Image (cartoon, rainbow, N blue to C red; front, side):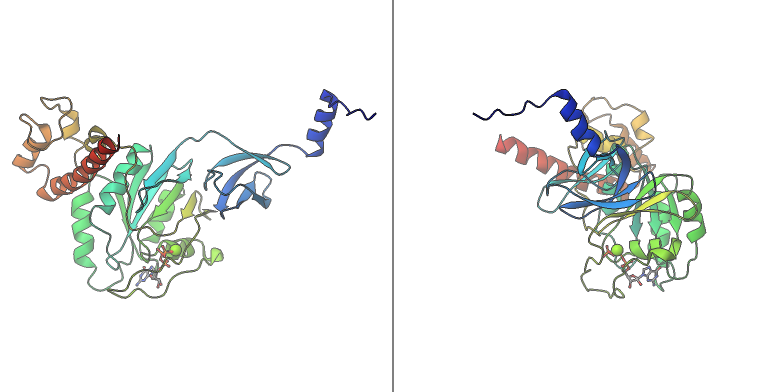
Length: 315
Ligand SMILES: Nc1nc2c(ncn2[C@@H]2O[C@H](COP(=O)(O)OP(=O)(O)OP(=O)(O)O)[C@@H](O)[C@H]2O)c(=O)[nH]1
Ligand SMILES: [Mg+2]
């Protein structure tokens, strides 16, 4: 007769100690079934994970042997992709750098949705206007500066000529963990290369008007910057679908509505469309909120309401 050996507490203890000590690290890249981890010791290691492990770049982890445990997240940035699926795109971030250029131009509403998503997630949004060296970029830049002055901090610069890059580096160097988003081809990887030439990230071909972007970067990667701070380069995505968003949230975080939100509307659940005694409509009437801001708000409101009605119909 064979007796199965009882697994005593001592055996378990020994098995655990054979795996070595706990090692703290941060995920600096996610490759589907493996994550690239930078440990506090400065070592880097690729560890296998399940395909849908839910880990993202920026996650703090504790690793023992091949077992990886994720620590609770301080912040979490999410977006809804073109198929309607929710994606967590980064964890433990402080700043969302919304990178735009006059070629390719951002899709309508892109900047506003990214600002709203950042604010909802507890991140500080900043606008990074790249390719200021391009001829014909002046009107594009001045319109953005006019719209977003006093709303978000912005940087006008060129990864190519390095003009204006120092201000961005100083800002990022305050110790933030920042995350670049922007349409493919706006120059996110080029900016990182300009700040940190040793990285030598792959950049796309020269962007031509009318040509569709080609997503040169395919994986988000986290990098430490020479003048301080950390920055995540990401694959470009063309829309920033909002996730779990109520109409009230939208007005609360919408760029340009900040002062109106300090006042109150007659109705607590005001959608700021046609309701009487609405603080937003009154400011639109007096010109302190521009028609352009208001129309952008209504466009995003339409999308949220369409999502709400799809959800109701499904139920
Ligand atoms: N003129 C000019 N071209 C730039 C500048 N920055 C980037 N580019 C060019 O824009 C193209 C795209 O640059 P990338 O850095 O690959 O763009 P990306 O945003 O990382 O693109 P994805 O990885 O596809 O999301 C390349 O041909 C760059 O040389 C700039 O400041 N001025
Ligand atoms: Mg890139």
